[in-house]
Image 1 (cartoon, rainbow, N blue to C red):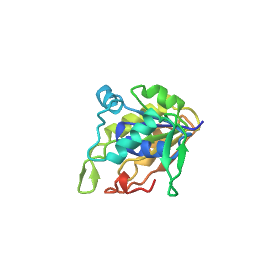
Image 2: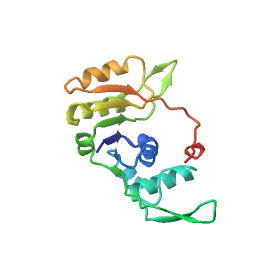
Image 3: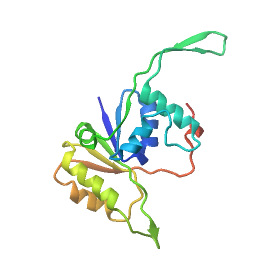
Length: 180
C-alpha cells in the first residue's frame, strides 16, 4: 500500500482530492495543531464555502455504505461501500515514518519585492522529514518557496535517500469545478 503524508493542514484539500480519486492510497494529513486536527475530524470542517470539498472530506475520512444510484434507463445501480482512506492526525512522527511520499504543504511565505521573508515553517517541516522519514521517501514541495529553497531542502534531508518534486497549484480553481 502506498502511503502519503501531508505535513501541515494547508495540504488537506489536495490530500482529500488525492484520497477521493485514489481510494487504495492511505493518506495522512499531519499537523501539530491539536485544535486544527480536531476541526478536520469534526462535523464542522475548517473550510469556507466549498461544499464539494466538504463532501469529499467526509467520504474519504469516514467511508460510505453501499448506495443505490439511479441510472439513466430508470434502473438502479449499487455503488459499493467505500473504506476510509484519509486520516487527520497530530502524530507527525508516525505519519512520516509510514509515508512513501511526503507532501510539504506550508503557508505561502509573505513576499516583499519578490523576496520571501519567512520560510521557518517549511524549514521546520524539512527538519522533521530528515529526522523521521524512511529511506527512499519522495518529498514533494507544495508551497511557494524562494529560488534556491529546493537546494536547501536537499542539503537538510541528505541523510536519507530521497527525491524532491515540485507540485504546482493554480489559485482560483474550486474543487466543485472538477468532473467526478
